[in-house]
Length: 441
Image 1 (cartoon, rainbow, N blue to C red):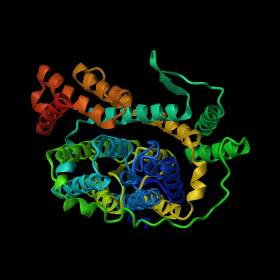
Image 2 (cartoon, rainbow, N blue to C red; image 1 turned 45 degrees about the vertical axis):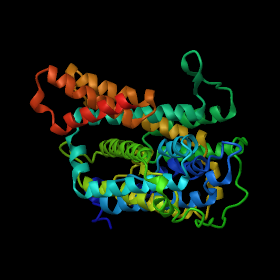
Image 3 (cartoon, helix red, strand yellow; image 1 turned 60 degrees about the vertical axis):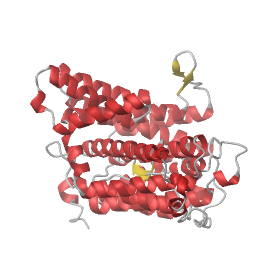
């Protein structure tokens, strides 16, 4: 096992990988609660039962799809990167497709399944790997920094430190609130441990924060440890019923499938590049073994659609695991195992609340923006697309949008500068694609 994952070469060990995998799981465990709540449209009152997916079934589908994706990533890709149904994509599934367009959730799952199959075939051709390797090194660093800013912004929001402001869009929240104070405590304790050079500081920070939260009654103490695994029958295989319905085969469904494709492709690519950069796994601006790593999201998406959940993609919270020492796919296997165990220990997940995870996201954001120093800011033709890529992610609340904007400006500035031949033809292709995307959006 140590030889397969190259522990000695990468300077890691079982303890370090286990801590990294555990930290990643804790940082993204919220998806086990949030995804079922989103896909069942729990916040929307008065909907007919036919429009709602079964909560327990979606919970099981979420855990299994996450485990499958993480296992494939760990064994084939060998990257410390975990997967789960994507935030944003699940909201698009539930609120735009099902609620907004009044499309049955079975049809929405059909669109997810088709996008997953298409991604799988695209990966087998090697095209996805070529696209990622065609991205200029400066833009890859900008993607990493942009995601760092993005997850820091998410952490600040989840903690209540930054809130919505009608006059200025965002503003400082009420710092006297208990959950916000708990998050601030978590940030401080994690910063202290990180500054002291303690390995696993992000993980220990989350544990200490959760314990303090329970002591001060800011987090409910679980009254049950083990629970029965809910039935997946209500959603299992429901996707196949959509293909026999003539209403599924409409032009509108094409747009839905393409949206799932677009967002998943660039969210996954951006996350893979960012985490690989953070872990020091990039070689000569290329991702080793990228082809196999890219199979993980497509396989997990196919499995998830059959079980009953939205598109599965790589999670940037994996960077918290990397910050705790994860360097290999063994950490992903640990995370996968914990997703499987979560099926039985769901009550314990109630302590992993926003004030607990927010400090980890904020601290990891600090670590990720270090890639800014590797961008050639002295060349304006590089600085513009890099900066726009980075800043657009938190402001648009989308990794894919930030990448799209950077991909549009990069060929423009390089052409004007007379560096046309230095631009990979794939970048010109995406310049056109993204331009059309924004015009038609």
